Image 1 (cartoon, one colour):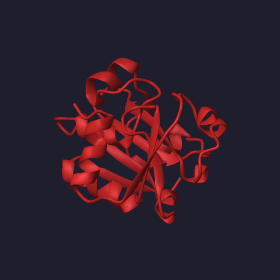
Image 2 (cartoon, rainbow, N blue to C red):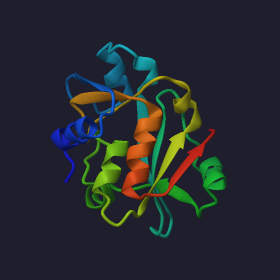
Image 3 (cartoon, rainbow, N blue to C red):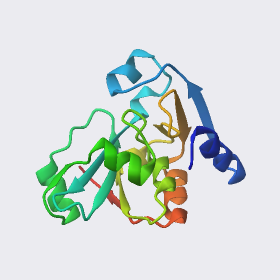
Image 4 (cartoon, rainbow, N blue to C red):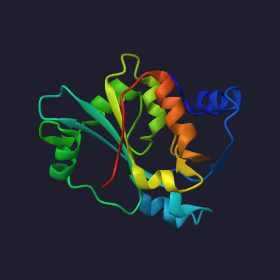
Length: 162
């Protein structure tokens, strides 16, 4: 299971330039903003969603200030109707708990069932801030490095404009 320490070790092993900032547990974007972290504008919001038949799961990583219209997203992803996945599904598929949802959770998806969906606007910045599978820290890394790590794991990836 890829926990915080394993994620940071992986970044070091792959020579990925990154910065880790520790902070109190954050369960929402409002929590993150209250910590007044540097680069807060590039913090990502992560949502775990599924289709109505529980056949397709998506980990959506978007800019923190965006909202998601699930009907519009359904069209973009060419999927069945979408809803938020349960905490049980989150734990079972990604080994994560509410508040710690992160693209690095994909590394716990042994069967590569979860599709990773990245907001194209996050690629415009030099770095993106995501939890290292633990909501008491934020890891800053280049968006292309994040995509490379997920790609190497084997999960399907989509980059979309919301």
